[in-house]
Image (cartoon, rainbow, N blue to C red):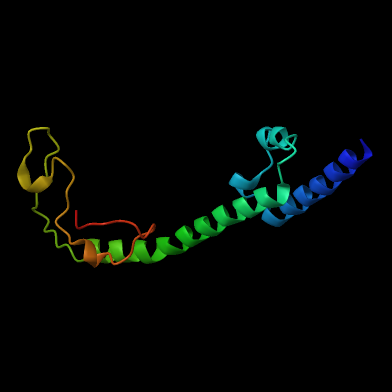
Length: 124
């Protein structure tokens, strides 16, 4: 019993250190489910922290891509000339003009030049 208590104390200390490390990151907060899983003898807090750190790195990478993509989208919008007498496109179901009904945009994918996931294939 003392061995198990010592192991729990060590793991709990690692858990507390991890909580301080990640701060208030939503996916990394402790939960009842994690506490429940900790009762399993094969559960490891360091492994859980490593898993969460990987997710945080992916999230940080995705967030770093937002400004460049947003800038390119704004450039695309700025290059579209619209005169004051231009009528808005219809949104009716029967509207068949230039792919408006299905949401297509006449813009090559290469003009964006970046993908958040890196796995988008626009050549389908």
